[in-house]
Image (cartoon, rainbow, N blue to C red; front, side, top):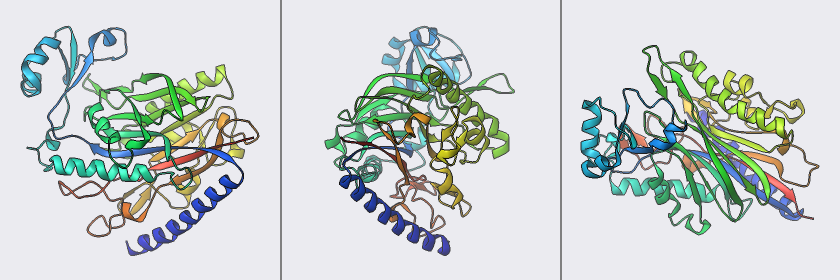
Length: 407
């Protein structure tokens, strides 16, 4: 991994120079800048045993499909308040009864509790929050003083951990607000979006389920897609936050699941483009696929250059960095780029009066890279060999800059 470290240092130096030049150019030419990012938080769980509770009325309306499975049983609100999470977990494993009221989702968070195998406690939980907030505070700050206007997030346990996160000293002055929804993922992890209200004003959000039939007749649940519609400094913007199914079990075995997740996202975007060919859409997430994978290249129709765009494609600014060997994740001494942000045609016209795409960035500061041990040269992950390492995440964050000329 020595060669990787030398390459990383060289690329980091060039990136710092490019960012400084970008900041100076934008300032000199009087541009307004909006930084938008995505970061996989790598299992941000608190130390408490808990379950996800969803509203049955929303299920009846079709917002939470396929509840009646082995791992997703329902229970009324009164029983939840009387029993508490511990006894509910026992009930979940041993009861087949169904009840109206609330829906209880099994959550695999035992390893992250104070009695769990990872040795998580208040100190390590606060340490992870501090680390993540340091990263987010610096993303985009060299170009725009307020940093990220919008951040999509993956691998968070529930709303409360995000509430703890936005209160961290490094970012609390930004007044980040939260959009979160409990998905039905079997690991108990969700996607979310935080935003600075001075820049972005959400108007509505929708949850897009991504579910699969298994051979045994049961449903496999993964992370829902979070679709947020709002105004970025007065301009309509649609943001889709994704965390597609993993490659666990093998890339080829699982490829159809990621293609299905991509199709669920693309169907909505195609509908938006039918209504407005110049609609401004940002698709972000941990896609568990590279820019040249079928889910991204073929289903999402992600292209590597703006000049290749057609009315039905998306521009993937992380395609060319991937071709050059840059990445956001590492596996078996090879960099991969699962974390991506794709853009619709409406954000590519540089002659328009509104925001358009200016630049992408893989946020790869040296402190985010593991310096020693078996993962030397990899992203400095939070958990190594079953214990909190003092690190940040096993993913590097990514971001884009949208700009608008001030006249």
